[in-house]
Image 1 (cartoon, rainbow, N blue to C red):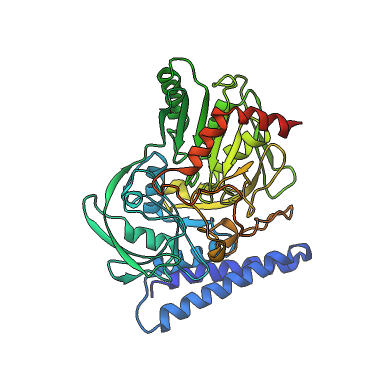
Image 2: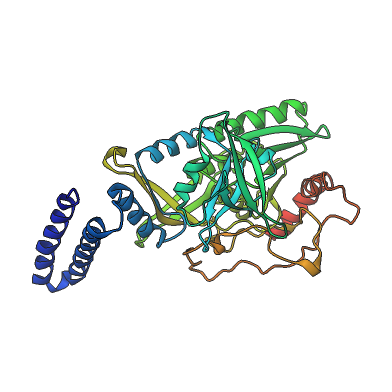
Length: 437
């Protein structure tokens, strides 16, 4: 029986180490751990021997590891070797698939955090907060997140039909064509001849360098008369911490960007911007919404706390934890994505579960008070989400004071329109002075 050579060493080591632990009272906790390992080995042996059909031991072990990590928080997980390679490719900004950032719910459903700009999912109208319940007619309810994502991937040019459940609508099918996803992390354009609009859709390895290109573009296209910049971080699911720091650095003249605090009191790291504001004090409005997460929240929180930008939109997602990718055997056995720290804004705020609250709350669409409900999901909705250790909580559902008028064209971007108004009317500097004072 193949499992014998797996179980016997585990059980033998557990028994030996358990005896050693009992010989030293201060290590009694270790003895408990080793007994649990014996229990695990016993269960595995029984399943391998008595289950109604032969099992795939490797798949069973991976599922056990995933279960352990999923019990910790929503973002810790195990990647096998193939998944680890896919993750490395994704952070470089090019991979095959649909262009969705997804997570799981308490009910075992796959939920969309955000579609990525310019991808098949975004073009098909998939929205943050949608549930994906089936792929090509086969239910994915109850699958692990990695299993569901693996089913969505495939050869570029092939079609896939996903079943979408959306609040207030009957489930519907959407057929998408898989593509090689070349994520354009940053785009830029000029509005009205004097205001630059810089959109950051994700934080991959190219984001900070592409931001520098974007800044040069808006300076050039405004003929050197740049009146203000709108930094659009809406629907940005985050990404690499170092890129969030570099992006913040571009707008700040030195000082702290973010700090991370781990398990031990001494596990504190502070990240600072270099001297020199790349925009030389040009007024900035940052757009955020409920799908602005992680690295996007680091940037928004830094620019808000340092009084560099006016935040406009709605409360952000609330992901305030840092994941470290730990290769196993150099990646040969895959890698752990493990939550190792929480991050804090320069003012010491943890946004875990609570999100970043904008300075000017502006709704994207008109809200009927009689049908008031939370749009999309937040970090606090995820299974086993970490608590906010300072006690901060996400605001309850409410109707923003500023929302589109009844006759507003639904195809027009109201939040962006208001951001432009604030810049043109000189309200950004006024609001920042009031906040500082």
